[in-house]
Image (cartoon, rainbow, N blue to C red; front, side):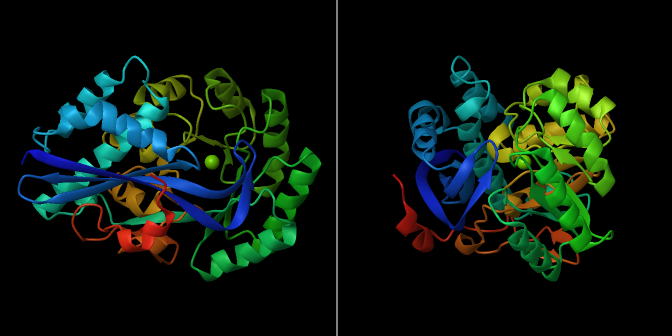
Length: 362
Ligand SMILES: [Mg+2]
C-alpha cells in the first residue's frame, strides 16, 4: 500500500508541577511531534517523538523539508528501505541528533500502519516474547524536598510499582546520599531502587558515588557522566560498586555498538524516540542480547511496552514522568509491577487530537 499523505503536528504539553533533572534543569512541559501517515486505501498509522520544549518545530521542518517528498508514493511496508532513505537524506547533517528524532516519528508511524493493516499488535509482529514486562516509576524529582519524594514513593507503591527511580545531582554527594538513604529506609528492601544522575559528575566523582551508593543496594546508577564518554563508562562499570545504566542520550545504533564494545554498561536503555525509531531500537535490543545484556527503555512507555514485550532479554520499562496518558485512547496498563502489552493492532492506541489541540505549537 503506497503512502499518500503525511500530517504533522507539534504540541507543547504542560507538566502538572515543574520538575528538575541535572542536565536538563527545570522543566515545565515537554514537546511531542505526532506524524500521521495514510496509505492510498485510507489506512492510517500514528507515530510520535518527544523532547524538551522548543524543539518540536525543528523536527516538523526536517520531516516536511527532507522526508515528505521521498516517502510519498512509496510502499509503506518497506520500512527498512524507507528508514535508509531518510538516513541517507540527512546523512550530512545528521547521523544522530535531531535527524534521529525526526526519523523516529516517521518510522513509528510506518510500523503502526503495518500493524493496523495486518491487524496485529506490534509486540507480536516484532517477535512476541511475552506481553508482561516489569515496570519502574521514572520519577523526576531533583528539585523536590525529600518529604515530597517519599510521598511520591508511597503513591508509586499504591499504584502497583515494585521499582522506583529517583534523581541525583544535588550540590554535594553527601546530600544525595542522605536522600537515597531516606528513600531506602522509607520503601524497605523489597522495593527496587534506581538512581539517575543525568550527567552530573566527572568520572572521579562518579566512581566515588558508585562505591558509596553500594550501601543502599541500587539496581543501577544511571548516566553518572556525559553520555559519550564510553571509556569513562567502561571505567565506572568495571571499577565501581553499583551497576551502570545509560542510553537515552545515544541517538544511533552505532553509538550503542561502541558502548557495548567498550563494556560500558550493565543496563542499556535505548529510547525509540531518540535513536531513530522501532527499526534501530530492535537492532539495539538484539545487539544487547548478543552481548548477554538486558534491554530496557527510556520514556514513551505506552509504546515501548510493545518493543520490550517482543524481546527475550527485556528487563524494565521506565514509566516516565512525561506521560501522554491523557491524550491517547489506551494508556499502558500496569498490573502487579508489570506493564501489559495490549492486543489491539499496531501500537494499540490512537491520539485524541481534540484534547491535544489546545497545546498545538505549530
Ligand atoms: Mg535518565
